Amino acid sequence: MGDGGRSQHTDLMWPAVEALRALGGCGTVSEIDAWWVLDDGAFSSAQRVVLHRGGPHTKLEYRLAWLGRI
Image 1 (cartoon, rainbow, N blue to C red):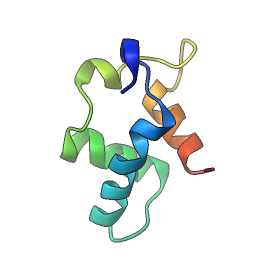
Image 2 (tube, rainbow, N blue to C red):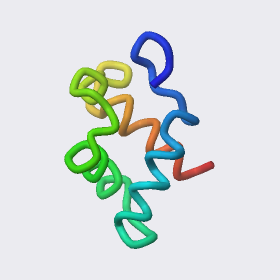
Image 3 (cartoon, rainbow, N blue to C red):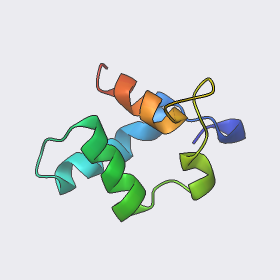
Image 4 (cartoon, one colour):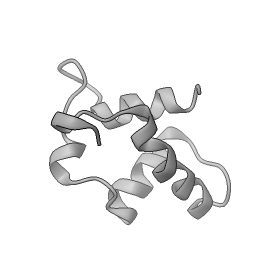
């Protein structure tokens, strides 16, 4: 993640590619998020709980959703 616990879109690209490979080439935002949170451990528990603008979604979920639009 970027400085100060803030994730950047580019920080998520490679973990997302790895997740897609592990998921057989395709996956929803929820599936990718679950893979790297539960299976890969790419991000710390502190990074995974930071809310985006007070919630209800985390910054990681928000950035991952945008990553799908790049």
